[in-house]
Length: 402
Image (cartoon, rainbow, N blue to C red):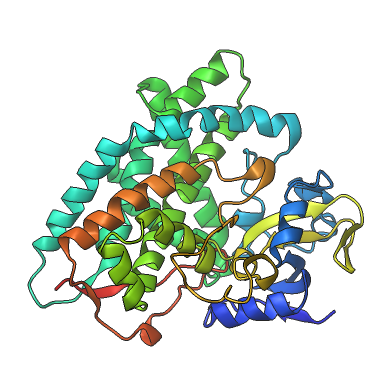
């Protein structure tokens, strides 16, 4: 099996995803830093593995971890070993840690946030409208970033004054270019910041999910301080990064497919279709790290060996022709059915999927209603990905508002 090295600079994600698909449903890959693992790259096999109890989140199962081959200053260590939370455990422990979060993020409860999301969206659009006429604006920094960060912070009870520091630390957390000597301090600083937030909520609880997690730990649900801090960090990280990329990717897709943009802006095709097709075709999450095999597992005509690590390559499986037919590589907002798994599948499916869909479903129609003549300020070929192997994330999205 040929080993495919994932590009730490993410120069051409489409080509890399195509190579992974061509390698078969189970590809042997090398993560930045020379770390070996396997990737599932086809839709059907991914669905099966994501519900297979032999594939677990316990890092102690990983042979390379047991052998001491994974350095603590590896730039991706925070994604592979982020501490104990619902992301890193299975079974009853996972259900216990996930329960409160899932209850807070049901479709019905998320819908109650709509009015607040609309108000935040309108405030962001007002700021965009005040931008000097004729000057390009970075839509990612000025629109796609503030909305999900404000929404998830309000949900978790994080003060806006912490946003600049969170942005700085998460930039390093996700990047493959963070110097190894800075990784331990970055991880420590994240822990310190989220511990401070939890301590503040313990002293002054509010109507937010962090306070609810603290209350649950005191009422007998037995969440440790580490679990509360790590859960807060996980939700903040995942709760804004995915939505930023989703909003940016929708705008990029519509601006590079003018006929489809016309159809959605005319009302011929609903925005829901646009969001779901973008989630499939240009998924916000390119690779999810990481699971481990407790025994040899057959995947197609290959075997995921016991003790080896597995990543899920959503960027590859989202364009799997075996699932979506010969037009899998095309952006088509009329595609039906469109049963993608961009938010995962099985017990660890993203609990924030409904919130991300709602934010995009509010923000994108409002953006185009306010600025129907919006255009890219640079050719699409000049847009560049950030060096993040897990997120399909642009450096910036310069646009002319029209």
